[in-house]
Image 1 (cartoon, rainbow, N blue to C red):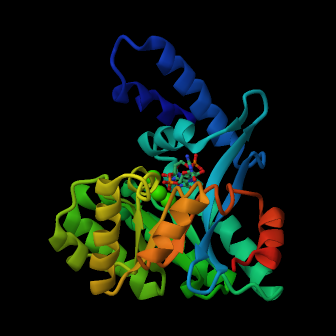
Image 2: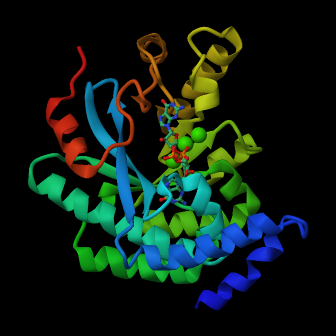
Length: 278
Ligand code: C2E
Ligand code: CA
Ligand code: CA
Ligand code: CA
C-alpha cells in the first residue's frame, strides 16, 4: 500500500526534491496515523441567530503527529487527496462525527454535524458505497448530517457533482456549498445543484460591517440564497460588530472565532449547555 506513495512526485515540480521527500515520509506516516489513533476531530459551532442557539457543528480534522505536534488539515488533506487516502480519511472523520452525534443526541442536544467532502469524493462510487454501509451500520438518522462541498469542487465536473450530491440527498444528507464566493460558479449552478445551505466565505464576511463593497455582496448573497430557499451561514465571524451586522441583514447562522474556535467533543458539549445570546 505504501508503494502508492511513489506517484506523489507527479504532483510536484521536478526540482522540488525536498518537498517530495517530506511528502513521502508524511504520506507513510499518514497511513499509520489512523490505526495509531493520531487523527482527531474537533468541532466548531454554527450559531443560529434566530434561535440564539448552537444548532449545528462543523467537523474539522486534526492530526496529532508524534513528533511534529498538532498538524492543521492544509498540510495533509491535499496530500491525502493526491494519493488516494482521502476516502479513508473522510470515512474516519465521518465515523467519529457520527459517534459524537449519537452521544450528544442521547444527552438531549439535538444538533446536526457537517463534514467536509473533497471534490475527489464526488467522483467516487466506492466512497458512496462505503458511506451507505457506515450510515446504515451506525443507525444514525442521515438527516443529522450535512456535507460541505466547495464551489470549486462542484465546478470541476458540474454534472458528476450534481449526480453525487443527489445521491447524498436521496440518503437524507443535507448539502452545504462551502467557501461561497471564492469560486467561479454561475448562478445557474446554484439553481441546479441540490443545495440546502450556502456558506459565505470568510474573505467576504470578515469586513462586511466596515467595508461597503463587502457588505453589499454579503447582503445580496443572503437575499439571493433566501429567494432560492437556502439557509445562509457566514463563516469567519471574529467580532461582535460583524455578528450584529449579519443579524441586521437576516443571515441565518454564523460561525467563527467570536462564537468559538474549533474544540474537542467534550468542550463542545459544554458550549452546547451554556451557549445562548441575548
Ligand atoms: P473550511 O472548511 O473553510 O474550514 C474553516 C477553517 O477556518 C477552519 O480551519 C477553521 O478553524 C477556520 N476558522 C473558523 N473560524 C475562523 C475565524 O473566525 N477566523 C479565522 N481566521 N479562521 C477561522 P482548519 O480547521 O484549519 O481547516 C482548513 C480547511 O481544511 C477547511 O476549510 C477544509 O477545507 C479543510 N478540512 C478540514 N477538515 C477536513 C476534513 O475532514 N476533510 C476535508 N476534505 N477537508 C477538511
Ligand atoms: Ca467547511
Ligand atoms: Ca469554509
Ligand atoms: Ca473559507
